[in-house]
Image (cartoon, rainbow, N blue to C red; front, side, top):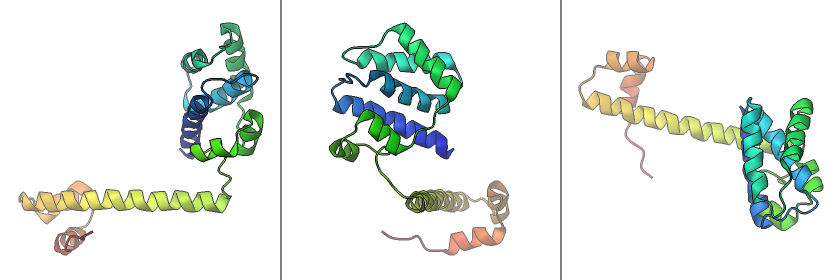
Length: 173
């Protein structure tokens, strides 16, 4: 799941980089598409879909590559399945400091601990949001006349948890 999200975000960043450079990737087209393709491979199993996405991106270049060059990129990338580090991507594409500031994932040299902390914070927030929406739904069902047992069965929680949620005053911002 984490690899999938990273690759999706990298694809978005690569598209953003292309826009920042006004679609001029002179001298970097092949490596750019190799990097993009290597991330697409992590997202899709279908090589035809990968090729279509690559071809669509290629059309945006001021000087697009040929169809045979694109096929070679897909073939090479699917065979070796590269997983490049941010540092390598930045070096290969000569991404500037200004460009890095505009990207979400590429070029943000976070330590493993920083990434882990960021991910854990995201998980805590997601859990809080899910729990608060569940609690609101429990209160709504209680107001509609559902019994504690029916609600507990619905959410696979104890009746005591239903009672606690019902008796907890809503938090104010």
